[in-house]
Image (cartoon, rainbow over all chains, first blue to last red; front, side, top):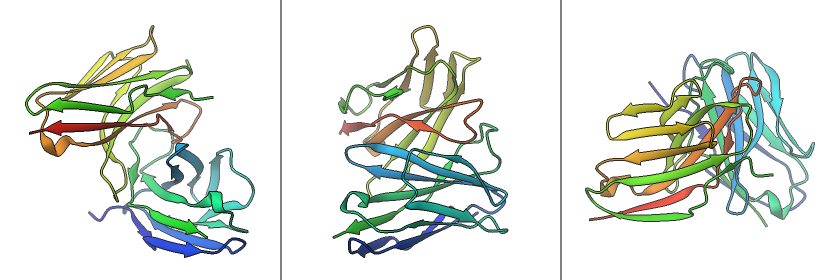
Length: 114
Length: 113
């Protein structure tokens, strides 16, 4: 079974630009979550989607948004990029939501903002 | 407010010995705990989990212990192997948090041959 796939793997953007990251969950998984990993803050929860609806949101500004499609694939968007948005963005999928099925992570998208 | 803390940024052990990684939490609403392993340039990989109704869960060389009264959990790896060298993250979730996990800062484990 294929794992969680994230594209692109690496991205370099300039301050003020916007970016869209993509995530394909494991087949059959319906919940998709996004996390930001930075050296200073560790892994921080961004949001969770289930059945195309955002179910949970972390403490991030409105510049960070996402969506989920009917095939469970998800995208996240960051607008008006800031230098501090440079991070590894991780997508994770699980079969259900809140059912204690472990999250399975992709290898992430490394975003660098210059 | 760091609700999940891993106080040791790094740990070094000899191959064949036991590795013990520790994690403390403050939120008493957490009822499910997980350990993940992360290699550079890869996403975290699920290792083992434990529900708050248990105090121990074992899977091969990996055992997780939960002490609810102390709000403390630990991961034991026996015997440690060089391939176990990675960053280990402790994570927790609660009944009302969906699939949202709160992670610790991670502990870099180095197993020396």
